[in-house]
Length: 143
Image 1 (cartoon, helix red, strand yellow):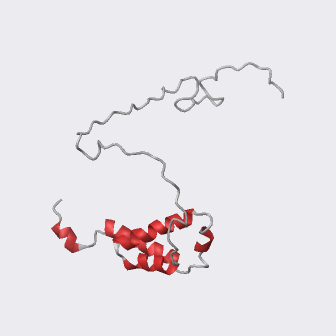
Image 2 (image 1 turned 120 degrees about the vertical axis):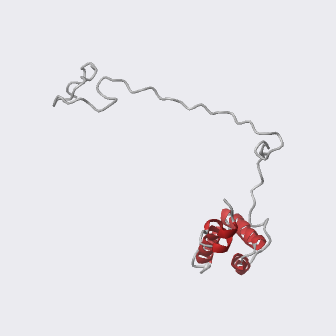
Image 3 (image 1 turned 45 degrees about the horizontal axis):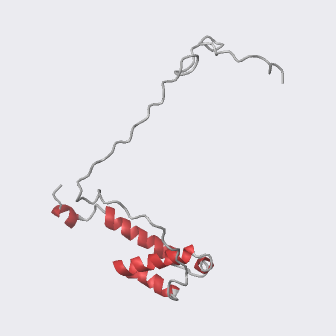
């Protein structure tokens, strides 16, 4: 490689066209990186924020840990709109989709309508949380 034995020199402060380099280049050192120190938060001892989580490794659940469940029951539980039924259905789906032996059963070809039902459930949940068009609820809020 020609010129590979040349020594490295500092770059001149101006480009060949006699214009200065942008800020931070051309001999001027960049300002040192300023680290933001993490502040310790002190919460009252009886508050939820002061409670420490209990961290332990949970046993991985598989399809054997969930009773034999019909896919139709999962879909109807999601469609019901009841909180307990929806939570159960999402928990069972999570366990079954995480298990390598049962994940193939949940393809879109085997369960038509499952994806539409999950998206409908997501839309409904988001609308319940963020819907600002509900005039009755907005009139009662004083903030």
